Image (cartoon, rainbow, N blue to C red; front, side, top):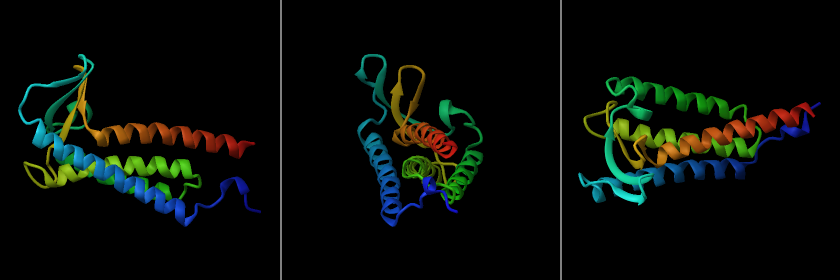
Length: 166
């Protein structure tokens, strides 16, 4: 007998998730385009004191510039992560988890587009970062989607497990 708490997702819910993913990629790419044209090599533009500013950086690495000398490896890892997220979609039964994965995929695609199309070349392109969080790191909108999507997915899956145990 089927467990009613694991209802199947509707076509409309899948369409919403696709829309969220496409919107996440578009927002990331549009803001990066703006940053490249508006910020250039100028001094940082403070938004909230020293805590938050706009500063253009072309990042060859991942978060905190990790792996900066292995950009092609990060490109492959990103492709693998996207493939794993697609595989995870076959197991998701909750709309909230589906939307979280849509945000994660949107963020991953946003940064992958940079790695595939930006200078210095295919697979080794530098990601456009422009949101400076104090002196800690500089990120972009895709990074925000990844963090929010990951936190949301953990929350959604933990709630799914709780409901199944009841």
